[in-house]
Length: 245
Image (cartoon, rainbow, N blue to C red; front, top):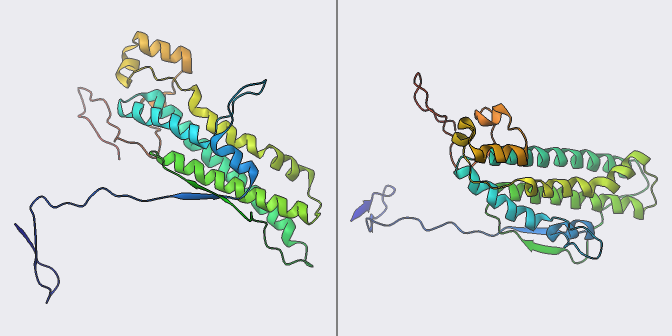
């Protein structure tokens, strides 16, 4: 039995040798105010002349494939996850800038004290993702939802908005759809960096399907900021294996 010393004056507590904290559990919810954002949660199935649209849920499912492939040291999975990470960051930056522009227009009307429009019955969505990039994409969707609320507030007040801002708002949904579609172009071919270095048939097929792999990705010089495993450089005769954090 292990004895917990505790604080001064505290009675010691006996614990079993195998006592350990249980698995962590928690819940994450996303409140969605607008129809535009709601439509991007699950996307749309194709049919009747309409193409399918990948939504946040489908995006999260496809990310599982990338995440698992990185465990097998697939450099193309690293490459695609870098694309996802960069694209999410870029879209969030554009949405923040657009939000600031809309707010500036609203604040310029001195006769109004404005409260941004909100839904009387927002959709509450449970986020049960196994991948951190899915949560980043959910934050991106929340940014989009907030921007659309601000846009609708400006329209409700009859404010004249610059054409450039109106066009960006109109096209902003496509920014998110392009991000959600990114993992679809990745193909899991059960390859590793070793295959690429050796120029195997699988590596050649991957190159034909997904393009030439950037050298910085192959060498591990550029990797996703979050990975399920630590990157290990291949050992060489002159240097032992290294680990990057």
